[in-house]
Amino acid sequence: MYALVDCNNFYASCERVFNPNLQFSPIAILSNNDGCVISRSDEAKALGLPMGAPIFKWENFCKQNNIEILSSNYPLYGDMSSRTMEILKQFTPDIEVYSIDEAFLKLNILDDYNAYGIQMRQRILKWLGLPTSVGIAPTKALSKIANKIARKYPKKTKGVYVIDNENKRIKALKWTKLNDVWGIGSRLEKRLQAKGCKTAYDFIQLPDALILKEFSIVEWRLKKDLQGIPTLKLEEVKNKQAIATTRSFETTYTDLNAIKERISTFAARCAEKLRAQQSSCHSMVILLRSDRFDTSGKQHNVSRCVSFSYPTNSTLTLCNAAVKTIETMFKAGVKYKRAGVIVTGLISNTNKQLNFFEKEDTKQLHLMRAIDDLNFKYNGYKVKLGNQDLKRTWKMKQERLSPKYTTNFDEIIIVK
DNA sequence: TCTGGGGTCCTAGGACCC
DNA sequence: TCTGGGGTCCTAGGACCC
Image (cartoon, rainbow, N blue to C red; front, side, top):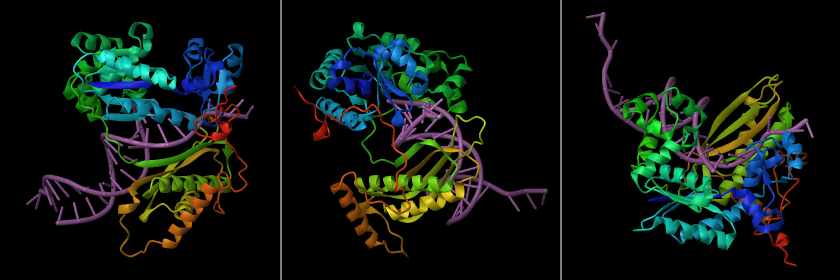
């Protein structure tokens, strides 16, 4: 059996743990740059504040309804997340950390799955103060649905729901709307509706042959999983395949130089992330996007891939390539709103293959180590390249940030 | 004035190989 | 008139996830 353990309203719940004043008030957490709402407490949901609401349009609404608005505090959430996962690992080593706030567990116990789920839930609540929902079923896709039921009916289920027989499975599938199925997004929902499907149950009535012919192997696997035939397995902990640094700008840019400065910083950040996990990349994708909300402006969305002759994690190499590439992508007259760098083809430093004709520049390796050491030592005062945004005229908007209670001694909670 | 960011997986099509 | 088949690798783009 598989269990899916999911923290309820994770970001909002993390804030509550350390700030009792928020215990009963509606809360909304904002995205980077304080742009839109990405997490809400149950009270805020009940008031009608939608997910993804751009805050500038909903500011008054929040004020009228006394919704507390907070900037996102990723150091706090990341730390609370790893504490949650540590607790779950006490129950089984077979765990897949699926996202910051949820994990799949493979359970091999003989009886009473419900009691087991209750135990997991209570331990996380008691030790961390975080409420969770637990769904248990024979497959991953079904455990997602069980989880949704537990979440939807907290009183009746006490936060834990187990699908352990055919009746429950069929009932759950008929209850689940297409769009609520894990793996069915809005596009797929439309295509399935055209086939006459409304619920997950309707979807699994479609014949295998039709699914393979008109959809793909992905949907076929999903169908099997929903039928109770385990097809989606627990994913091993594996190295990342890509590392990204992408941002929306706080304003739009029409000036190539400004974009070059930003893209150079994104590339530098990717290089730092690579070095931190002791790996290198052999290619890099540069993205450039115009303002999608500016309907009158010219739209221009491009991405371009660059390959290196041998795997690298040097800030110099990545920044230079990124800046050179962006020059070829930029179109004058377009208002650009977002850009990013993604490094792919990641390989561990210990077994990277060098090019036969070129020697790895060891000087650069030493330089990078020196830069990383300095940046670590003088936290906040970074050594940067000349083509990065040295003046740093922009800054991330985080006007309502809570303290880093668990990861910074200066911000630790004070008990009076 | 102000609309997130970081990932994964799949497919199609082209280039190239024997 | 007739011109194979099977494979890999790469890139771009789409869809989906939280």
